[in-house]
Every structure is written in C-alpha cells, then in structure tokens.
Image (cartoon, rainbow, N blue to C red):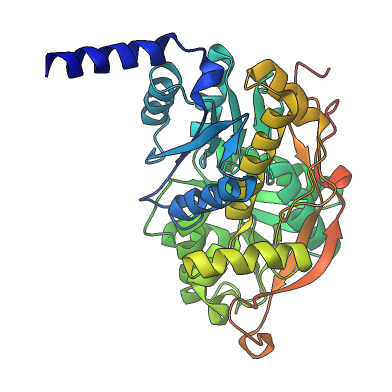
Length: 397
C-alpha cells in the first residue's frame, strides 16, 4: 500500500514536472447548457467539438487531445471562475464556444491576462475584435456587424426604412442594435425607437405594444435563443405582422427556426454563416452531425467544429502549443473546412468568411426534414465584417 502510494505521488510529481507540451492538448467548451441559449449552442456544440477532435485523429504532436466542458449559466462571474480554474489548475490550453457576449468579453480579458487562446463562436458582439480585442483572442462564426449588414442592409434596401428595436438588455443586445442601426441609417433608413428587454423574459407584451405603437415598418429583434422564439410567438398573438409590420430576427439560427416550426417562422429573413444544404462540404458536416445527434447543426455548432479543427491545425503547424506561436499560425492559415471555404483570419482575430441572407420557407416549400431556408443573397466576407483597420482594435490601428 505504502509503495503504491509513493508511486502515485511520484507519478503526479512527474506530471507536474513535465513540460506543458508533454501533457497533450486540452480544449474547454464553456457555454450555456441549461438556459435560454441551451439549444442555440449547448451540448450540441460539445458534440461538434468532439467531432472535430475525432476528424483530426484524436491526437496532436503525438499527444492525446482532451475535451472538458462546463455550463456558465450566462453568468460572467461564474464563467470567469470556471475559466480561471481551467487555466490555472487543469492546464486547459484553449477555450471556445463562449455563447453570451458579457461572458465572452470577461473570458477574453482573462485569456489576455493568462496568455491563453480563446476562440469565441456563440457570442455576437463585434467589440471582441474591436475595442476589446487582444493578441490571443479570436472570433469565428459571425458577429453583430455581419448580422447588421446582412439582415439590416437587405430589409432597409427593400423598403423597410423605419425601425424599432426590441433589444436584449446586456452587451450583446447593445452591440447588435448599434451595428444594425448604423447600417440602417447608412442605407437611408431611420431608427424611430427601441426598448431594452431583460434576458430570459417570459412576457414580451409591454415591449411589443411599444413596437406596435411606433408604427415602424420593421421591428428588429436584437435578441437570441429562446428570447427570439418567445418574442416571435407573442408578436404573432399580437397580430404585429398581420397589421403590416415586419419582424426581423437579427440573430436567428436553424435551432430557433426549428423550435418555432415553419408555420410560425415562414417569411422571416435572417443572416447565418452556415447552412447545411449550401454545398457538398456543408452537407457532409450536416449529415454526419445529424447521424450523431438527430438534428442538423446551426452556424454555432458548425462554427465550433471549425474553431476546434482550426486550433488543432495551428498547433500542428506551429509544432508546439505555445500560445504566441499558435496565435501566429491561426492568423496565417486559411480556413477551408466543412463550415467555411476561403476563410481568413485578420490581425485583430476576426475570421472573415462569406455570410448568407436567407428567407425561411413556407411549409409547402419544404421538401424534406430540416429543409428550412431559401438563399436570397451571399454577403462577401469583406463586406460583412469590419476590416482590421476599421474595427477599432488597438492592435491594428
């Protein structure tokens, strides 16, 4: 017994003494797994990261790749304490997914302090590669600027020139309203008002009444997840669309459309960075994910797959998991996978790729399960996202 104990102590001492590079690579998925964004990202993003690790071969630099995961419950302080423990105690090398902008901004700051890489997928605020950018921080699937350009630009140009916003009352909602408002006014439109709505609201009636009385042509929903689903359902009960106003789901993914059903979601215009039925590559990822999970991936799930895979490719190319070297490789390597084709990472950490403007099909137009979107337009990446120079990032001014 005593010798076994001594051996165990010696082994753990060896592990502690071993250089970090000899301990394999550890990736953390930190997101909302039980709340308003559980379907939007949740355990499905964990499965997407697992898929990427398997596709990469399960090891890098001759060491096993490990995946850890936790539910941050949309609380920045809880997320920070989990990430701190992961970085300081559990030797996690990279944290990704990071749904919820307030959480992502907090982890971005912590990663900078700890000199560790984070790749944000689920959170939207363009500040992550703007004024809050940092050398080890990346932003992958989309951001509030790209959503504003896609949905805001298209609807304004199509005659929807007066807007009223229902805005989630935290960092994400503010950024989405700001970025969309700028695009609306740049295209000759006008914002007539907005109201801030607490995260995870169950009753949108007073906010919807304000939107209705504004007489704006477009009611912009600057929210996400279940908040979007619930506000659309209640808007339908209020007859907002029936009375001539149009709803814009400024951040909607396949997960929310699926939750609403085509009957309720038909005709909605939205912007995503991925749809499973776009081309052979997206279909390959979609169909494999469907086999594993029973559902098609959204842009968040597919983006988590891509972020995880790209990180591992960068570690392999750098020949080390040293964050400086890996960050450099992430910015050098093209992003060509089943999520994005022809993607590139800018100096501020923003991954630029084409975005897509979709309209949700009528039930009669849908020919098979998950056949939800028709493509209205492709928004080229360099139009969708800020340039590094224009992003407001102190590293690229």
